[in-house]
Image 1 (spheres, rainbow, N blue to C red):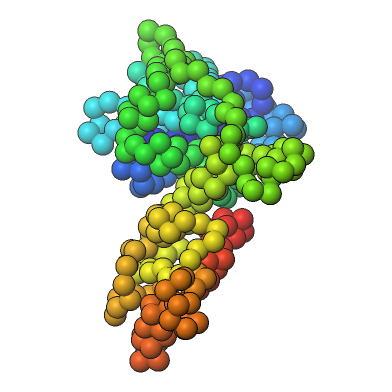
Image 2 (tube, rainbow, N blue to C red; image 1 turned 120 degrees about the horizontal axis):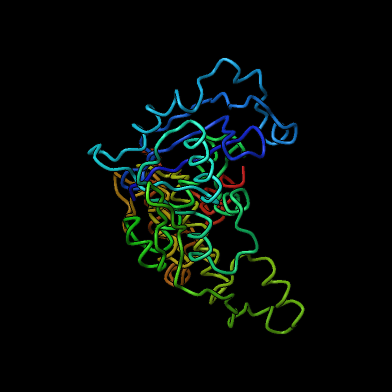
Length: 346
């Protein structure tokens, strides 16, 4: 995943009234660099409604450079690593941000460069069909991405993370693979004109065919259960895991930990739990040893019950290592899931 995400804030309704621009560089799916420019718009007029949205007043940019004065630094930041071509520019509602960029160039007599670009709103629609809303804020909240809306840098970071999340969900490692999977063609702008990003893939709202045991007995309960989920999915269980995996990849609260599981998990399958631990940055272990730092304990399994014990062999081994001074966190299934659910909500 290599791209540069951008976001503009404007002083008024004119598309050449940029007052803030930010850019976030992503390489191999990681944010590696950020930049933000405060811009003095010309003409120097701020609409009260725009100020109410982003909080940027005339006083904050009165002594800042114009877009033309900033452009050499902006253009340099948008180049790819080899400095020979421009990076693929990503924005949410890209038609707005690309329009502001072109309007600002035109007003300052800057020849537009050849820029490839794409839109995370379009990408999100194709990645998660059936979502009720595809605005930057509702998508980010759904994915557990926390940011201050209508700050150009914060919006750019959120935009970048949404694209990274789409790649995680589709299981691809490059932007080109994601575009091919979703059948999306990039947009382009340049001296010869512009073309918006498009998709040849038709999407429709999926219907859920499998329900929980309690929901099957009552149609109203089924509808209520489905309404609790923002994205339809073949099973309610897989939908939850999908969202948790994506959130976990941002939170990574088990980074560097060595995680083992024991007993019967009731809310998540063992393979999904192991995958979630890896998304959180942990290293899964099948046994307890001197490297183990976390043990997630489920209900006693048949072997434990048959032996007359209340604790599994793994739990007893972990507790013995703790008495010998080894630092091992022993947590329940709910405590393990809270690493994603509650941290993503706070």
